[in-house]
Length: 233
Image 1 (cartoon, one colour):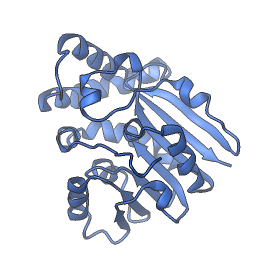
Image 2 (cartoon, rainbow, N blue to C red):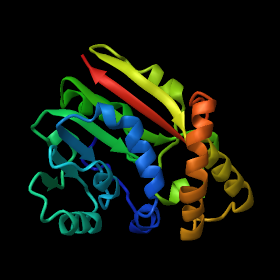
Image 3 (cartoon, rainbow, N blue to C red):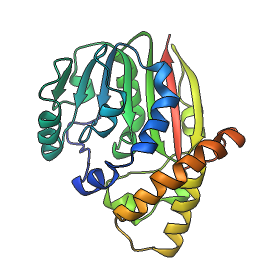
């Protein structure tokens, strides 16, 4: 990734989704087994997901390039001795990790394939790269553009990556009811820049619990997001 590339995390988006606690808990349960002791979370935003997986037994490094988000991160975690926060690109971190997280971040990065390669180079042997990205590029909307998404994804992108010295362990869809809600919202509210806090609350408190059931029934073949786990071998 070029140093001129910008990771765009509008504060409004982060604040709106900060209360989506059901969704983050669901996501955490799906990736928990791949989280090692030393964790790097790239583009941590305002630390919403960090709070979900935080443990005193982990050593956590957070990176963020947005000045406002950095300020919030440093305030939120100022008393956490096992969390360090840096304003750095992944390639400039001189450290190896058991797990590296890109939670709703890769879609903000122009050279995403290069970023994946850099991230894998920062993993310890048998470490895991964990990615959550928005699915279905045909659903790309004004909202995606406004919050700095270069693209949405399909599973084929990850399945066709060069997997030399690494293994694609997980690649599946999550949040089928959220996908239906998002699709309908795009059709009805074509010019909406941000979903309202009310819509996010309805999705998180009503639709996510439904997704937990439907995702299992449909064997995680449909959904609003793609979850990917790549192991360095």
